Length: 337
Ligand SMILES: NC(=O)c1ccc[n+]([C@@H]2O[C@H](COP(=O)([O-])OP(=O)(O)OC[C@H]3O[C@@H](n4cnc5c(N)ncnc54)[C@H](O)[C@@H]3O)[C@@H](O)[C@H]2O)c1
Image 1 (tube, rainbow, N blue to C red):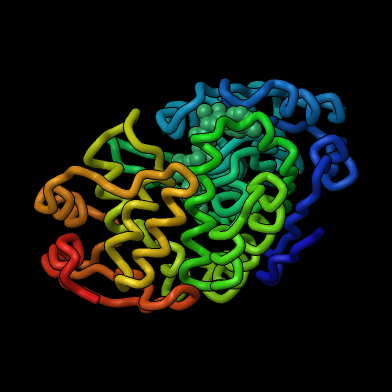
Image 2 (cartoon, rainbow, N blue to C red):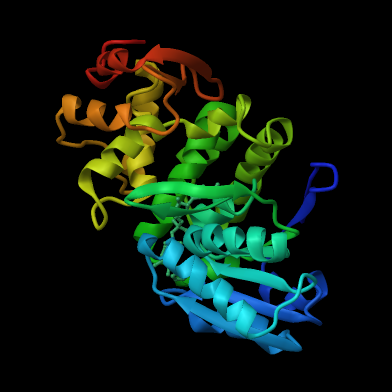
């Protein structure tokens, strides 16, 4: 299936097809220099498959993990491209999860003021969410995504066969982003996830429906000035939980799952809790609300002492609420519905 993302000149196709990776040459012009960016945790065969179809391809491997989204790697990759004489008409293909997608996209956005960028996401989180929408970035001084750009890929190729090698915890954490989108925007998708008896066979449908939600939001608000904030459901408290426990604790998706539980009605909370438990995702965290609030105050989405939160009163609907940051304590303590 091809999902077009309409953004005028910056629009592109999202190809969702089992086996698409082995046919990548049919979708992307590989008859030029191609930098294939991957990480040490992504099975080598995926990057090799791309390289074998390239006329002049180079695989660049960074270490797996969030710490690779660094200015140091950004510079090293750029230097490598200078050394190999990449020109403005050459291309970069990221093959891996959100880490290499965000890093590769940022490199492509600035090498010679921008070269063609293609994303081949291989985690559920990146297939459902991070590979589309054009947010590319690296982290700096412990602050996630603080240096980056909006830079849309030329094409996104989603091959759900690559998920076969992904470990179950990563898959479930990625599913949280699907649960997030369904909770705010598509009650049927929520029911599909809630009632699925064979997740693997339902995954492609979940990915397509999740992508449609994100695609529609990105088309209406490409630079996150308003509506696109709906994608942050669960993120205000989720990020605080993530920052508080540091790297190596809960995964991003797991934190988002926990964060959603505070920003919804009792009825929605009960359904969310039950779906998170079904997929072995955490539903409880033992952290002081004052500590979480101190991280929310540092959230880069805060404006002065206010922040916009996404609240779900009923599955498939949402409200954007501008609240005082101190007021979030009431949500953390379960007092606002
Ligand atoms: N740009 C956006 O809009 C956006 C949205 C959400 C998240 N993000 C970013 O995405 C990143 C997280 O992405 P992620 O969850 O994909 O993590 P990730 O890229 O770190 O991948 C998770 C792990 O899975 C491994 N892996 C990847 N594909 C695999 C496969 N097919 N088989 C086996 N192992 C595989 C990786 O090596 C890594 O160890 C964060 O940096 C976050 O900030 C970006």
